[in-house]
Image 1 (cartoon, protein in one colour):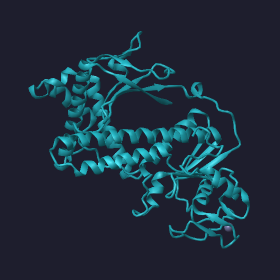
Image 2 (cartoon, protein in one colour):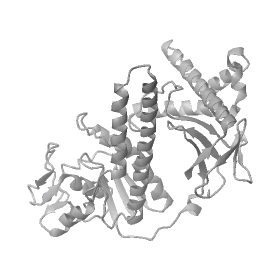
Image 3 (cartoon, rainbow, N blue to C red):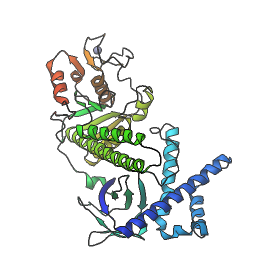
Image 4 (cartoon, helix red, strand yellow):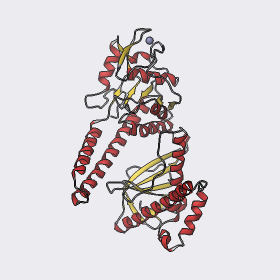
Length: 408
Ligand SMILES: [Zn+2]
């Protein structure tokens, strides 16, 4: 299993220049490869293979126009071609419906908010006895080690974000059996509906919204974007406003990741098994109008649930096929057809149970995954239990305060 560990790094002046050069070279190699494939496609020629691109890169390095590529580690450039391959693979998989929608590979720009290069094991990078990160043709970079690495990492990615901060992201390959960080066993299982009205709804009735720190960061980003749109094109102030937007973007991304980490850790700790709906199916089932603002964050959140489940020996189930989660009564199982989106609760025509749309969906997801969840949670009434859970589940500011998620 692969684990990722990211740390803030502090390159000095010459190292920042060397990194900027490496980012630039990796970008040019990526763009050259993309252009070669695009040109071939336009000319009706077959797809240019990875081997062929690699060969062209070697030839390009001896030409005067591309000689400067020799100033950076060859591994970084090869890795850039691998990244191009990955971008194509993701695109083809999306076209074939195997993963959520992604566009075709795009040309990289100097103005992209995130610059990165990757060093694999054969790039001869290392962590020095003094704790610096030694990178070929860049130097020994100072790292702020916020936690220990569990094993020797195989790969390191150097990242510069839009706020001008640098990070080293290590990949550590671990034996899953050795790594398994056992959490105490629990009887709880849960289904999660990624809803329109809330970020997520658990089958026990807990409704989770974005926490205040994230919504505040999003508000600041919106304001920065408004300010930017009012600045005159080409002006100094516009440049400043643009930098401010970039920093606000980075803050929102950090806050969102933090929220996803807290929530996924809490859910995995509290449940022996977790079921979610496949996001591809979810996307298909959704009209354009109903497209939620949460969409972007869900795949990151679900990915966290999946790897944390693997790490801690929990069961993670993705409902692969389309389940009409809002059409079926979670209490008696009768399918009484689709309901307009505005209908948030209804009484089952067969058994009379009053159902909450989102919680009913979460219970149905858990059931479709074969998890034995209590169905009464989806009921709005009668019975005081679900109502209480609901009130306790989401605090006014969006923090779930229910005991189920103690890390929030
Ligand atoms: Zn029913």
